[in-house]
Amino acid sequence: MRYMLLIHQNEAELAKAAPEAWQAPAADYAAFTEALVKAGGSPGERLQPTSAATSVRIRDGKTDVLDGPYSDTKEQFAGYFTIDVPDLDQAIAWAARCPSAKFGVIEVRPIRVQTGAKA
Amino acid sequence: MPDNPDARLLTVARRRQTDVARRRYTRTAGEVHIQLMAEELEDAATNPEAIPDRRLALMFACAHPAIEAGMRAPMILQTILGLTAMDIAAAFLIPPATMGQRLVRTKTRIKDAGIPFAIPEREDLPGRLDAVLEAIYAAYAKGWTEIGDTAADRLADEAIWLGRLVVSLLPEEPEAKGMLALMLYAEARRPARRDTKGLYVPLEQQDIALWDEPQVMAAEALLRAANRGSPTGRYQIEAAIQSAHIARRVTGRANWPTIIALYDVLLQLTDSPVVILNRAAALAERDGPEAALTSLDTIAADKRMADYQPYWAARSHFAARAGHKDEAHKALTTAIGLSTDEAVRQYLSGQRAALNDG
Image (cartoon, rainbow over all chains, first blue to last red):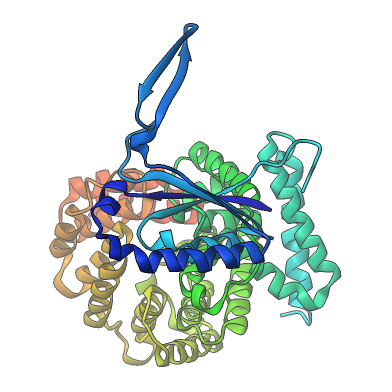
């Protein structure tokens, strides 16, 4: 099964951390990404903070544009990666390996299989 | 026990499983999963070596941490033992319609989230084992309450069989042994629970000679083995309570102070109104009926007690002993109205008649 692992973390807290506090996580992330790719996963992408986000919706034919993320939460969606593994336990193991799991939350979501192309 | 209990149990489970599947799988897409689990069981049947592991693996899938905690045991009861949503709802004090919807949602989730059918790694085992034990014990409790019903007796047998299976596959787990001991203590007293006319006999009035001695000894041995391991969990404590109850075999009197002390430990672990209720019965023996009634007052406002038959039966019992006739009469009437077992209903009606005469 393919899973997307969605990384959520507290931007405000992380912004307060000193730059040198980032050295260890950055090295961890490099090692994690290498292992992930070796296992056939995709390193995904990291997003700009929600201060750069814009939310768009169409209501009654009118396009409504708002600054900021879709929802105001304590932790913000920060990036994702995908992995193809046999079951949830192995997806959970990858979530636990992700360095962001130590300070944020990783949501594990199965990727929907296209109809007609059963896994 | 037959030579090949695995195959026997599997046949029973599969038959129930197929019935359940036949009844419901056309209703919603989520029910497809029942079919999938039925196939798992079918596979296991054609490969006898793998049967115990396979059934246990299915149970652990239902007990996965990615499943809402309150739904793990109900899932096991439905998929492994084929209980209906209504039976399960009664065991967990939840409305049947709600339980039905939750079971369907959980099945869909097992499939969609990709929860594996596997015995977890050693380090993940303790947390997952709790739900497995809870389900087995709930199945036993169901088979225990409905004494006259042969299907229910069989459910109790299956629960004990599953308990033995877990103990044999996970010999290092003291709580598994504690739970099996607890079931065997209860099972040992089964022949003493009805008199020759089929009427209900409360524990303290049971004829000791009717208790099944080999089962008692097996339970005591299991409890001792469990206590050698650690940590001590709720099943070991509940089994120890049973052991203190049946001390009457030797000393002529149940060990009430020990029973109350064990309930106090249990309360710290579970905080359940049912534990308070059972503890109150022991309090009545040690400190008198007024103490028991005062204790019951602390759970009187709990909504789950409103239609919980044992609560009203206990309440009436203590009130009668304390001489509060009106309260005893009212509580007895409620208890009779909530009883599903004919023998219990007759026993309580007898109590009410005695109250009016006395």
